Length: 145
Image (cartoon, rainbow, N blue to C red; front, side):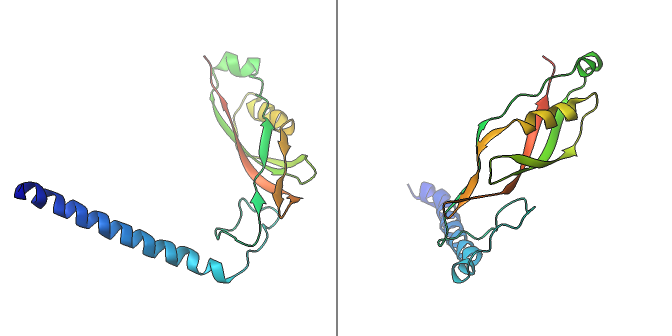
């Protein structure tokens, strides 16, 4: 019985120390946020500020339909596979603009991904009940089966 207690004691001490440190870091991380108001997301920003806000309600973009891009014959012939990443602005009026490729693929696959992204159907993000524009990252994978 005593040998089991000797084995468990370091584990229990480490667990309690971890819980105490996590609480301290959480207080340091969010303590300054509670004293200041959250600034709105700047146009072109990739994400909202890191401080959670109690004063405003934010709802992220909800994608309803994300069309699958077409795999080009040239890419199929060459065996081209991979992932393309795009940055796009999801506008408050329900449209998508400023689609910019961050990583590209040859044989027309990047162009197909951009074309598919232009046809995404979504509900805009809202802040305090009003639609707002946000910038999101999109990924499209191309694999040959």
